[in-house]
Image (tube, rainbow, N blue to C red; front, side):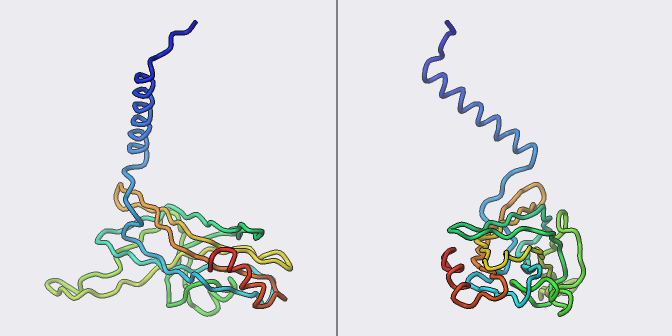
Length: 207
């Protein structure tokens, strides 16, 4: 018969294992930051899009860095679907210079309208502080050209809609890691589906 540890010893051993795992995670990835951290992401929660034709959809999300140090984006997670609706499927993603547009649109419009120009690999892209001093001895902040996260998504299947609940962006500032979550309660419907179908899809995610 194997010797059994007393209950208190087993609890102590479990606490030790959890502590060792936490220490291992710290050395592997660095400390976990609290909250969303200094990055903020524009959201169009509550909007719907009815596609005029079956084509890829782009989600353009401008990014602002409210901190004093540069942030490095590691990637993001899309959360969608549920209540009988599918989640969007990612085709590819990239970072771009934001020229004032945001939200959901046919992917072809992003380049055609010049709303987000240039394509840079998203993983590892640096987001500088959104404001800087105008010059030596001049404290007035001036804006820094904004970046946007662009996610290209497949369209919903014919006669259906997909829904998006939230976007979680994973990034780090120095050795501190953050996950910023922003609500993206939106719905995209295939061509031929009207406002009633879009509103029903949006209602399924609480919009």
